[in-house]
View 1 (cartoon, rainbow, N blue to C red):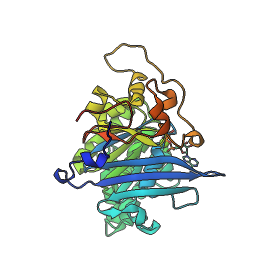
View 2 (view 1 turned 135 degrees about the horizontal axis):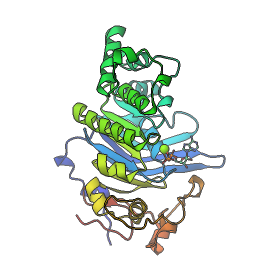
View 3 (view 1 turned 90 degrees about the horizontal axis):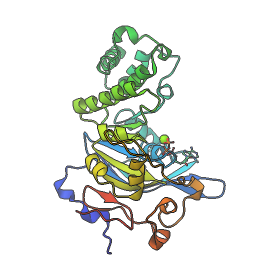
View 4 (view 1 turned 45 degrees about the vertical axis):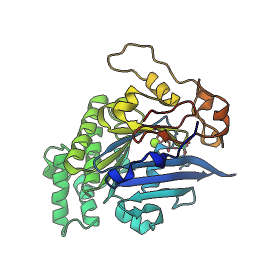
Length: 339
Ligand SMILES: Nc1ncnc2c1ncn2[C@@H]1O[C@H](COP(=O)(O)OP(=O)(O)OP(=O)(O)O)[C@@H](O)[C@H]1O
Ligand SMILES: [Mg+2]
């Protein structure tokens, strides 16, 4: 079987220029004895207005990928980032910390799992949200910035924003705090929001409200959203396309409908078999074994082979490339996606 590089499948000329283009991203973390590869050969692109999911088991490298995109790894002694991250025609890996600070919050916003990591408990929320348009010089006066903050609080569904702007974070429920963080993210009018498990800490009703909100805001503002989650239900309902990550690598990428209808990598199939599907009563099958810890990721071959029912000799030797059609790609020696 001759394998072609993924690039050969890409009809580049017919596509609008990507908002974000990641090529060969690699994040290594320093251990006492060596650099450990936590994210390897991650390549993908995002269009404006797209909601792309990044899914995978705990510890597979989702947050590190996001942190690398935000320029938060590699600037300290812990990690090292290699590869290319092109965002709106700029190579982010070439930018200084000062230049990245101007992009973070303004052009790429971050919504984390725990709103209290973004909200300062000792300042009123309105002042904190207003800081974003003020620092990024989207307003000429502090008063204008406060007005922008209140408008965003209103848009994300905080009642009485003029009054509530004066309250401190503790006076809001978990769901409301996450709305505040989203309004803070959006008040910089970003082109890309990276939302890292934004609803994991919330109950299902509030989770649905927050994801609905992100979905609506995408429609209103045209921003793209990279949604990190381990919840395939969230992927099915709110995302356009999804990337499945295992042991630091993307093993499958496809539009969501296609991925759910035709999961091709054995890991994706196992993931789907391990969660309930609405309307289907079937026994759930947990994935046998567990994902390798960072220090145990094999230096060659497919890292999923230990848990894979289809593993064969080739899987011990080389990691397969992510190949397939322009829209559906998979990294598995046993699988070929039909164009
Ligand atoms: N600051 C750090 N120092 C040491 N190891 C780290 C650090 N950050 C991440 N790691 C390790 O890198 C690997 C990937 O971590 P990452 O946080 O990206 O996983 P994740 O997919 O986001 O998991 P989760 O779903 O639990 O959030 C893990 O093995 C983790 O222990
Ligand atoms: Mg994480």
